[in-house]
Image (tube, rainbow, N blue to C red):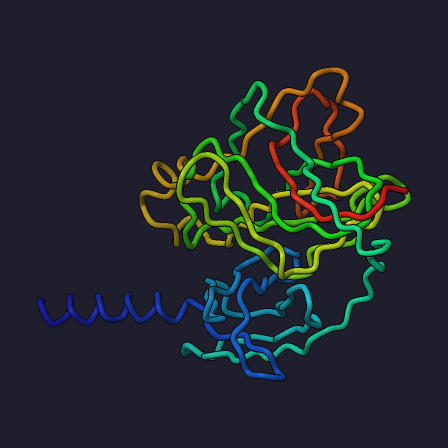
Length: 295
Protein backbone atom coordinates (compact mmCIF):
# COMPACT_ATOMS: atom_id res chain seq x y z
CA UNK A 1 0.00 0.00 0.00
CA UNK A 2 2.87 2.39 0.84
CA UNK A 3 4.45 1.73 -2.54
CA UNK A 4 1.15 2.44 -4.32
CA UNK A 5 0.74 5.70 -2.34
CA UNK A 6 4.26 6.81 -3.26
CA UNK A 7 3.61 6.08 -6.93
CA UNK A 8 0.30 7.97 -6.79
CA UNK A 9 1.95 11.04 -5.17
CA UNK A 10 4.71 10.94 -7.77
CA UNK A 11 2.17 10.85 -10.59
CA UNK A 12 0.27 13.80 -9.09
CA UNK A 13 3.45 15.85 -8.72
CA UNK A 14 4.53 15.03 -12.26
CA UNK A 15 1.09 16.02 -13.57
CA UNK A 16 1.36 19.37 -11.80
CA UNK A 17 4.80 19.97 -13.28
CA UNK A 18 3.64 18.99 -16.76
CA UNK A 19 0.64 21.33 -16.59
CA UNK A 20 2.87 24.34 -17.09
CA UNK A 21 4.55 26.22 -19.88
CA UNK A 22 7.92 27.74 -19.06
CA UNK A 23 10.68 29.54 -20.90
CA UNK A 24 12.81 32.63 -21.38
CA UNK A 25 12.50 35.77 -23.55
CA UNK A 26 15.64 37.55 -24.71
CA UNK A 27 16.93 40.30 -27.03
CA UNK A 28 17.87 38.79 -30.40
CA UNK A 29 20.66 41.32 -30.91
CA UNK A 30 22.61 41.05 -27.66
CA UNK A 31 21.10 37.97 -26.02
CA UNK A 32 20.16 39.85 -22.85
CA UNK A 33 17.03 38.67 -20.94
CA UNK A 34 13.99 40.94 -21.22
CA UNK A 35 11.95 41.88 -18.15
CA UNK A 36 8.28 42.83 -18.30
CA UNK A 37 7.45 40.95 -21.51
CA UNK A 38 3.73 40.17 -21.59
CA UNK A 39 2.43 36.84 -22.89
CA UNK A 40 -1.23 36.76 -23.93
CA UNK A 41 -3.52 34.04 -25.21
CA UNK A 42 -5.94 34.25 -28.16
CA UNK A 43 -8.57 35.93 -25.98
CA UNK A 44 -6.17 38.79 -25.21
CA UNK A 45 -5.77 37.67 -21.60
CA UNK A 46 -2.30 38.16 -20.11
CA UNK A 47 -1.19 34.77 -18.80
CA UNK A 48 2.31 35.71 -17.69
CA UNK A 49 4.97 38.42 -17.61
CA UNK A 50 8.72 37.86 -17.52
CA UNK A 51 10.85 38.44 -14.42
CA UNK A 52 14.28 40.19 -14.31
CA UNK A 53 15.89 37.04 -15.73
CA UNK A 54 13.46 36.96 -18.67
CA UNK A 55 11.76 33.85 -17.28
CA UNK A 56 8.04 33.08 -17.48
CA UNK A 57 5.63 30.34 -16.49
CA UNK A 58 1.90 29.83 -16.89
CA UNK A 59 -0.60 27.02 -16.57
CA UNK A 60 -1.89 26.82 -20.16
CA UNK A 61 -0.07 24.17 -22.19
CA UNK A 62 -1.34 24.63 -25.73
CA UNK A 63 -2.48 27.36 -28.08
CA UNK A 64 -1.13 30.43 -29.90
CA UNK A 65 0.35 33.06 -27.60
CA UNK A 66 1.33 36.66 -28.33
CA UNK A 67 4.66 37.87 -26.90
CA UNK A 68 4.96 41.65 -26.64
CA UNK A 69 6.82 44.45 -24.89
CA UNK A 70 7.39 48.10 -25.69
CA UNK A 71 10.49 48.68 -27.81
CA UNK A 72 10.36 45.26 -29.54
CA UNK A 73 8.42 43.71 -32.38
CA UNK A 74 5.53 41.49 -31.31
CA UNK A 75 5.81 37.81 -32.06
CA UNK A 76 3.62 34.74 -31.67
CA UNK A 77 4.53 31.29 -30.43
CA UNK A 78 2.54 28.10 -31.00
CA UNK A 79 2.61 25.73 -28.04
CA UNK A 80 1.31 22.18 -28.32
CA UNK A 81 0.97 19.80 -25.44
CA UNK A 82 3.61 17.11 -25.92
CA UNK A 83 3.09 15.07 -22.77
CA UNK A 84 6.23 16.49 -21.19
CA UNK A 85 7.36 19.87 -19.95
CA UNK A 86 9.17 21.89 -22.63
CA UNK A 87 11.46 24.88 -22.33
CA UNK A 88 10.76 27.70 -24.78
CA UNK A 89 13.39 30.28 -25.79
CA UNK A 90 11.81 33.29 -27.49
CA UNK A 91 13.93 36.00 -29.10
CA UNK A 92 12.52 39.48 -29.84
CA UNK A 93 13.83 42.02 -32.36
CA UNK A 94 14.17 45.69 -31.31
CA UNK A 95 11.66 48.06 -32.91
CA UNK A 96 12.27 51.68 -33.80
CA UNK A 97 9.73 54.24 -32.59
CA UNK A 98 9.03 57.61 -34.17
CA UNK A 99 8.17 59.81 -31.21
CA UNK A 100 7.33 63.49 -31.56
CA UNK A 101 10.30 65.80 -31.43
CA UNK A 102 10.93 67.39 -28.06
CA UNK A 103 11.34 71.14 -28.72
CA UNK A 104 13.27 73.08 -26.11
CA UNK A 105 14.27 76.56 -27.33
CA UNK A 106 17.80 77.74 -26.47
CA UNK A 107 18.13 74.84 -24.03
CA UNK A 108 16.17 76.93 -21.50
CA UNK A 109 15.34 73.99 -19.28
CA UNK A 110 13.13 74.70 -16.32
CA UNK A 111 11.89 72.33 -13.64
CA UNK A 112 8.13 71.92 -13.43
CA UNK A 113 5.95 69.85 -11.12
CA UNK A 114 2.50 68.55 -12.03
CA UNK A 115 1.31 67.99 -8.48
CA UNK A 116 -2.09 67.06 -7.09
CA UNK A 117 -0.70 67.24 -3.54
CA UNK A 118 -2.37 65.51 -0.62
CA UNK A 119 -5.79 66.97 -0.20
CA UNK A 120 -8.60 64.85 1.12
CA UNK A 121 -7.19 61.35 0.60
CA UNK A 122 -9.44 58.38 0.07
CA UNK A 123 -8.29 54.78 -0.37
CA UNK A 124 -9.22 53.16 -3.65
CA UNK A 125 -8.96 49.39 -3.38
CA UNK A 126 -8.59 47.13 -6.41
CA UNK A 127 -9.01 43.91 -4.45
CA UNK A 128 -10.08 41.54 -7.19
CA UNK A 129 -9.65 37.81 -7.11
CA UNK A 130 -7.01 37.00 -9.74
CA UNK A 131 -8.62 33.79 -11.00
CA UNK A 132 -11.81 35.74 -11.75
CA UNK A 133 -10.04 38.62 -13.53
CA UNK A 134 -7.93 36.83 -16.17
CA UNK A 135 -6.73 40.17 -17.47
CA UNK A 136 -5.67 43.66 -16.58
CA UNK A 137 -7.23 46.82 -15.24
CA UNK A 138 -5.91 50.33 -15.86
CA UNK A 139 -6.65 53.42 -13.79
CA UNK A 140 -5.12 56.82 -14.35
CA UNK A 141 -5.22 60.60 -14.14
CA UNK A 142 -4.86 62.96 -17.09
CA UNK A 143 -3.02 66.26 -16.71
CA UNK A 144 -3.55 69.38 -18.78
CA UNK A 145 -0.26 70.46 -20.36
CA UNK A 146 1.10 72.90 -22.93
CA UNK A 147 4.82 72.44 -22.25
CA UNK A 148 7.49 70.69 -24.33
CA UNK A 149 10.22 68.79 -22.54
CA UNK A 150 10.73 65.44 -20.83
CA UNK A 151 9.44 63.75 -17.70
CA UNK A 152 12.22 63.04 -15.19
CA UNK A 153 10.38 61.30 -12.35
CA UNK A 154 6.94 60.19 -11.29
CA UNK A 155 5.53 59.53 -7.83
CA UNK A 156 2.46 57.50 -6.92
CA UNK A 157 0.75 57.52 -3.55
CA UNK A 158 -0.10 54.07 -2.13
CA UNK A 159 -2.36 53.99 0.90
CA UNK A 160 -1.24 50.41 1.51
CA UNK A 161 1.79 48.57 0.14
CA UNK A 162 0.25 45.09 0.12
CA UNK A 163 1.83 42.20 -1.77
CA UNK A 164 3.23 42.09 -5.26
CA UNK A 165 4.00 38.48 -6.06
CA UNK A 166 3.60 35.97 -8.85
CA UNK A 167 -0.15 36.61 -9.03
CA UNK A 168 -0.09 40.31 -9.77
CA UNK A 169 2.14 42.89 -11.44
CA UNK A 170 1.82 46.67 -11.39
CA UNK A 171 2.95 48.46 -14.54
CA UNK A 172 3.45 52.19 -15.01
CA UNK A 173 1.84 53.72 -18.11
CA UNK A 174 2.24 57.25 -19.56
CA UNK A 175 0.23 58.08 -22.68
CA UNK A 176 -0.38 61.12 -24.84
CA UNK A 177 -4.00 62.21 -25.27
CA UNK A 178 -4.98 62.11 -28.95
CA UNK A 179 -7.00 64.52 -31.10
CA UNK A 180 -10.22 62.97 -29.78
CA UNK A 181 -9.20 63.72 -26.20
CA UNK A 182 -8.62 60.05 -25.35
CA UNK A 183 -5.46 58.14 -24.32
CA UNK A 184 -3.43 57.30 -27.41
CA UNK A 185 0.30 56.82 -28.02
CA UNK A 186 2.57 55.41 -25.32
CA UNK A 187 5.13 58.01 -24.25
CA UNK A 188 6.83 55.54 -21.89
CA UNK A 189 8.19 53.00 -24.37
CA UNK A 190 9.54 50.45 -21.91
CA UNK A 191 7.89 48.22 -19.35
CA UNK A 192 8.36 49.71 -15.88
CA UNK A 193 7.08 47.55 -13.02
CA UNK A 194 6.12 49.05 -9.65
CA UNK A 195 7.04 47.30 -6.39
CA UNK A 196 5.92 49.44 -3.42
CA UNK A 197 7.24 48.13 -0.11
CA UNK A 198 5.73 50.75 2.18
CA UNK A 199 2.65 52.90 2.06
CA UNK A 200 3.13 56.52 1.07
CA UNK A 201 4.87 58.06 -1.93
CA UNK A 202 6.58 55.65 -4.33
CA UNK A 203 8.91 57.38 -6.82
CA UNK A 204 10.20 56.13 -10.16
CA UNK A 205 13.29 57.79 -11.68
CA UNK A 206 12.61 58.27 -15.41
CA UNK A 207 15.67 60.32 -16.42
CA UNK A 208 17.06 57.50 -18.57
CA UNK A 209 13.75 56.62 -20.25
CA UNK A 210 13.39 59.68 -22.54
CA UNK A 211 9.69 60.21 -21.80
CA UNK A 212 8.69 63.30 -23.81
CA UNK A 213 6.20 66.02 -23.05
CA UNK A 214 4.77 67.05 -26.42
CA UNK A 215 2.78 70.15 -25.57
CA UNK A 216 -0.38 68.09 -25.18
CA UNK A 217 -2.45 66.67 -22.34
CA UNK A 218 -1.05 63.39 -21.01
CA UNK A 219 -2.26 60.46 -18.90
CA UNK A 220 -0.42 58.72 -16.05
CA UNK A 221 -1.82 55.32 -15.13
CA UNK A 222 -1.20 52.15 -13.14
CA UNK A 223 -1.96 48.88 -14.94
CA UNK A 224 -2.91 45.98 -12.66
CA UNK A 225 -1.87 42.81 -14.47
CA UNK A 226 -3.12 39.49 -13.10
CA UNK A 227 -1.60 36.26 -14.33
CA UNK A 228 -4.16 33.72 -15.41
CA UNK A 229 -4.64 30.77 -13.09
CA UNK A 230 -7.50 28.37 -12.70
CA UNK A 231 -9.03 28.29 -9.23
CA UNK A 232 -7.61 24.79 -8.74
CA UNK A 233 -4.07 26.08 -9.38
CA UNK A 234 -4.23 28.85 -6.79
CA UNK A 235 -2.69 28.38 -3.34
CA UNK A 236 -5.26 27.88 -0.60
CA UNK A 237 -4.70 31.30 0.95
CA UNK A 238 -4.98 33.42 -2.22
CA UNK A 239 -8.72 34.02 -1.87
CA UNK A 240 -8.80 34.58 1.88
CA UNK A 241 -5.40 36.18 2.33
CA UNK A 242 -3.23 37.63 -0.38
CA UNK A 243 -6.04 38.67 -2.73
CA UNK A 244 -7.22 40.99 0.06
CA UNK A 245 -3.75 42.38 0.66
CA UNK A 246 -2.78 44.02 -2.62
CA UNK A 247 -1.30 47.51 -3.09
CA UNK A 248 -3.92 50.24 -2.88
CA UNK A 249 -3.58 53.27 -5.10
CA UNK A 250 -5.16 56.40 -3.70
CA UNK A 251 -7.79 58.91 -4.77
CA UNK A 252 -7.70 62.57 -3.83
CA UNK A 253 -10.67 64.94 -3.76
CA UNK A 254 -10.38 67.88 -6.19
CA UNK A 255 -11.74 71.33 -5.45
CA UNK A 256 -14.32 72.45 -7.98
CA UNK A 257 -11.96 75.07 -9.44
CA UNK A 258 -9.47 72.38 -10.54
CA UNK A 259 -11.77 69.75 -12.02
CA UNK A 260 -11.30 71.02 -15.56
CA UNK A 261 -7.53 70.41 -15.33
CA UNK A 262 -7.60 66.72 -14.41
CA UNK A 263 -9.68 63.66 -15.27
CA UNK A 264 -10.01 60.10 -13.98
CA UNK A 265 -9.71 57.39 -16.67
CA UNK A 266 -10.16 53.62 -16.65
CA UNK A 267 -9.82 50.66 -19.04
CA UNK A 268 -9.85 46.85 -19.01
CA UNK A 269 -8.94 44.03 -21.39
CA UNK A 270 -12.52 44.08 -22.61
CA UNK A 271 -13.18 47.82 -22.91
CA UNK A 272 -11.22 50.83 -24.21
CA UNK A 273 -10.33 53.83 -22.09
CA UNK A 274 -13.32 55.73 -20.71
CA UNK A 275 -13.54 58.84 -18.56
CA UNK A 276 -14.96 58.09 -15.14
CA UNK A 277 -18.14 60.13 -14.74
CA UNK A 278 -17.34 61.77 -11.44
CA UNK A 279 -14.39 64.13 -11.76
CA UNK A 280 -14.36 64.93 -8.06
CA UNK A 281 -11.79 62.20 -7.27
CA UNK A 282 -8.63 61.37 -9.23
CA UNK A 283 -5.65 59.12 -8.57
CA UNK A 284 -2.86 60.82 -6.67
CA UNK A 285 0.28 61.29 -8.80
CA UNK A 286 3.14 63.79 -8.83
CA UNK A 287 5.07 64.36 -12.07
CA UNK A 288 8.46 66.10 -12.29
CA UNK A 289 9.64 67.37 -15.68
CA UNK A 290 12.21 69.55 -17.41
CA UNK A 291 10.40 71.86 -19.80
CA UNK A 292 11.03 74.60 -22.33
CA UNK A 293 9.02 77.78 -22.99
CA UNK A 294 5.27 77.36 -22.96
CA UNK A 295 3.38 77.59 -26.29
